[in-house]
Image 1 (cartoon, rainbow, N blue to C red):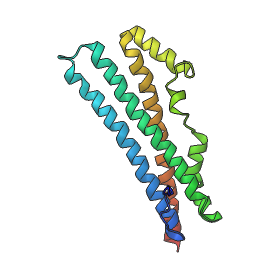
Image 2 (image 1 turned 180 degrees about the vertical axis):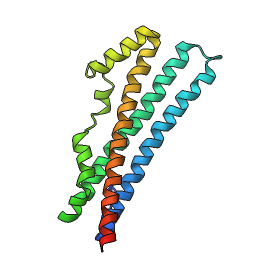
Image 3 (image 1 turned 90 degrees about the horizontal axis):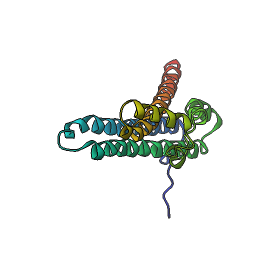
Image 4 (image 1 turned 90 degrees about the vertical axis):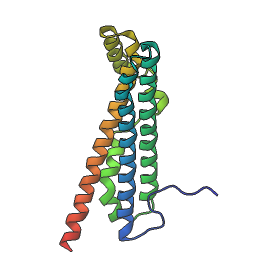
Length: 178
């Protein structure tokens, strides 16, 4: 039998909202860690420049950005799915508390990876990466393209993180009143 994936882990009542917030906060940190790992690897790639030609090194940099942003995107979709499944099990007042977090997923939907990596679906990003490739080096075009995806991932995780902090502050202020 397939295990149900949500943030509740069998908890209900007052601990349910806290469990959901802790779970989604942990997943946001995981997404940020994946993006920072990809960026760190790309930053270290210059150490291989003396031994690896640009025709090998630059595609590896683009691949690193693509992998890290792809894993972050899958993590974002999993967070959204787990949050919706968890919220379906909550009562009305608990859903109201979590509404700012769910609103982030509604306001900043992430397209599928197939659509994000399709240059014909992202003409603005394609144009910017082509312009950067013309100005610097044509081998940089794929790097600029996937770097744009990476930046969008970081931006959305930052917005989601701010929403989580806002909900945590709201819960903390409500608990201090009691």
